[in-house]
Length: 273
Image 1 (cartoon, one colour):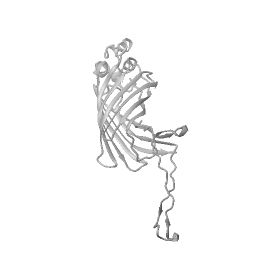
Image 2 (cartoon, one colour):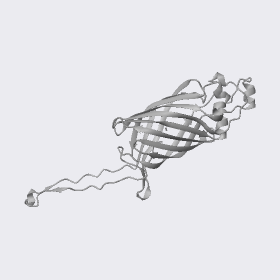
Image 3 (cartoon, one colour):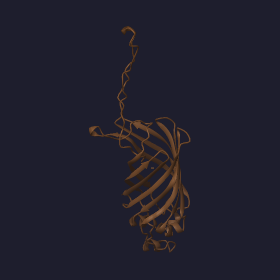
Image 4 (cartoon, one colour):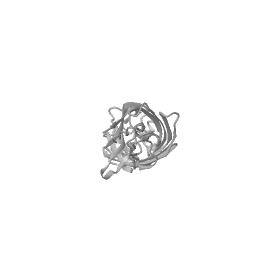
């Protein structure tokens, strides 16, 4: 994240001094309420999530592997000229269209750690960074993201999704909806392709295969967020994906599993500066 949806404007209310009393009463009886003390808005506010996750060791693996989970979400940023991104109020909810950041980390794939991949070259760990556009309403939301492998695979990927949003209580929010993942030909070949040399090194266990880009997987995600207070919270999700197209036909997936389950849970904390 799974960055969160960003709002484009902040509403500021000017403090007012209230004067109460009777116009018929003497001046000495007039009561003046103290002026409200203005609350200084932060220049920067963001939320960090840290916890544990379980995901396939590689795309197509049969078993889950435990790992760390983390995310960063920008809540508010004051810009020059009085402009801002997001909302400084931690209890505020912003609706409509908003830009969003997108990040994904993919762990290293090693044949040393996975005997069934014997003969395949190792794939370095990758970090994808990108942007997206989200649309949020109280009971539904949708997003579209595009990312580039700045570290590792150096290929383009994208993802679209939507959620039905439920609010069983003021503190608990549930989300469930579909996801579709896309990857370029370079990305598909990195994780699902098998070269002739790799096929020979595997002793023919994995046939030579050239994967094309396109829609590579589709699935559904169920997530839950519980706000302990304005600063702390708990966030978790379970996701199921099924491989599509050339990813599904890959010898790597064929000898493994054509669908994957991943899960995560972590604590969230909001920081303001």
